[in-house]
Image 1 (cartoon, rainbow, N blue to C red):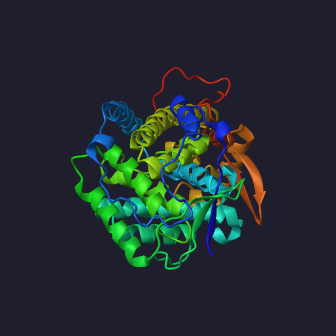
Image 2 (cartoon, one colour):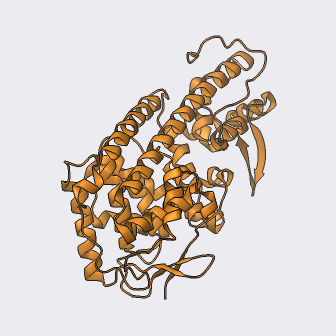
Image 3 (cartoon, rainbow, N blue to C red):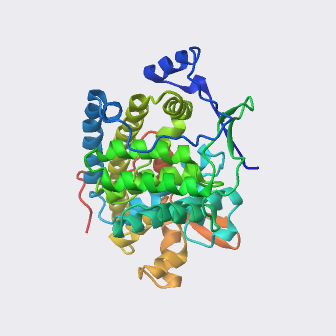
Length: 409
């Protein structure tokens, strides 16, 4: 029997609309039995009057503006690999943490470009999430989302070939009380039919705003709960790759799990409200607010990354002009846990010279040399602190001419 546990921390809720929903918990609930499989899950789309209210459409406008500003900010970074190597790792760590798979950003960067078998189990799981996010993005750049694509994504997340659930007995429980809060549909044929409807909704309901479709499909995917494990992480990957498919993002740089983990109780409660009462508006508004808030935060983060890149380049150019190149500085941001081989592979320097460069950057205070197994790694502390900090700030290097924000030659 597969048992999954969901943690509800009502005291973490910070939205007035959600507080209202908490008070509603004391009211009489409809005749929904969470211990019985939800085989009567309504197909998509929901009635238009439930998912296209004035409040939802108004929230859509501001979320779309924030997404456009995020796309524009990403273009400030000359090499997109700087963001694509970093932000999906933050998303992977947070999304995994929602499922109580806890690792650190430092570990993720340390093992991001080496054999994963050297990492601990939690870090391996989070790195597989990052890989699934990359692969899902490649898939939707070639074709539209499908049921088979969801199966491929969950298989990457779990590191084994998975198919739709065949056995009954999957139940979602409250971690604290052990109470069954939801039992998803059962039967492979039923799950296949529901997922086909889910995919058709995303592909053909083009009259519905893509952000609304994203919120609706996310609920439906979680309610179908098609796999024995990995549903939550797969669902969150599908959110991001759907935005890429729709052209609202160019790459998977939306760190949406940050918002969900900060409001986890609200997230699960509103999912339940859709199930019990078909309360779509609060759920969709919550997701739209998450998109907007995350875009604003990520846009600020990207701007700070660019500022730090330019500042670091000027510092290295002025203090170590003989080794300076923009390519070298850019590599330190693509690979904040840098190895000698990274410089060699990038044709920046031969192995012995690359070692000299990295050690000089350590002496300058840009990098810090640490031991990792049998090799030494050169860590970029200032960049790591910027990536992992909630505030998008960093401390200047001293005694340099830093009057403009142009990239030095």
